[in-house]
Length: 592
Image (cartoon, rainbow, N blue to C red; front, side, top):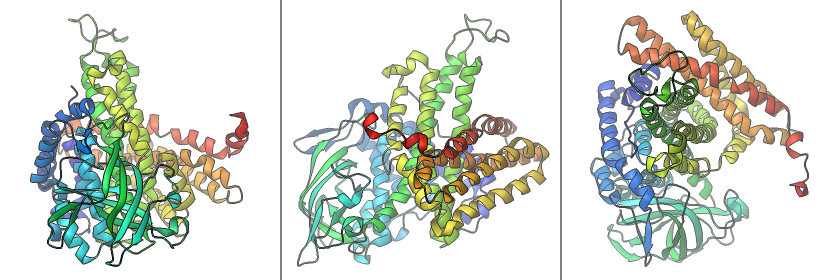
């Protein structure tokens, strides 16, 4: 069975030596000293490895079952969920007014990586609840917040988000679910939703569905969509659970992965619902959930890569096959461990350099969200909005690729279920699809985010990287050569691609055909940026003779690999972008 160990030392390095969180002016960050965060991360790592990770294979093999309309989770899930609740982990960053601990969202990102790496399917139950909590907290009335949020913070009640219908996914304006207004101010919700993660289960007393629906007589298309709170069981004004609402599970989907999560078809038959936010403004409220969820999904992609990589390293050090071409490394054995071979080392370095860069990128994203919300910082809001499709799309695409690389390290054993490696690949695959498929993320980046605010967030990011490169080059000659110069080259290529898109307004297919390459190019530049920051931090610690020298030396070697072997992909992406849309679109549809 695969194992998992929380990367506490690396998380602490990024938080305190790279991002220097306790020195930032974000409210609450002054309390996040290294001792405090170390205690939280250490405990999260312990729960991840000892409680949640052992259930990952169980969930994959057993899956969820439905009998007589009742959905049951795999063996051990309920007991683990109780431990998560009792420890207060489900409300780590939630509002203390409703029972949360009020920590910055950054700590949710850091602990969430470990929890998801241990068991992605299991963590989707509290994860969806957190998104629903955020939407109600942002858009609900005081009465709605008081009624629903305390039990959702504690996860006594869990939550979902209901968007997709059988005939419409991304184009939500086509939805048919309707909400008929009633004389008492409630609505009767009727329709069917599909692909509803954590749609029903046996681990909570109630499930609070957030459902997109159309009020008859409203505007056409997406402008006529509203958002509703629809509980599984009705709740009175005192918070007491009552009769079953008109909500039922049509079926539990059989999926490629995340078998431990109940992905349901949900049927609404005149279910009682309550308008959340303004009528016909449902997408604004739903996007409160979706933007947070997209960063979370990006971290899920990373987390599966982390778990797969850790096990691949163990295997590569243990598996004996062949001899090192430069000389025998295991003279007492029949062969050397496969980690001596350059191609195996390449696969592991690809994984390691991505994982550590992606972790820093995700945590940086967490600080932007905190700054946007806690400081009401419009600049940070613009930057995280720009980077959200990159965080989601790039981290999940690359995360999936890295689970495949880890599987490849195992050779034939990676294809055999008893070794557990295929689960990481199967579970990671969904992250590229849900919360907006990655092709849609790329279109959003090019079609909306790049020009948002007159292009100010994008220009601010380019300037930030330019200023940083100048400052970093002046600090260290070696860093300038090995990190800054490659980053400058890649950043200039990214700007060239962005300008090409701006000049392609008369031929928008040129931009759309290059959007996917642009998203990946953007991701590589962001990882190059954080890798250069990490290199500076590691070099400074080594110069001062402080901390774990081996950790910092390893960090520098890993960073050099990324800059030399991974970042040059930007050149390929730029060439593809500049080739335009003709090669993509010239073949007639009938010729396929």
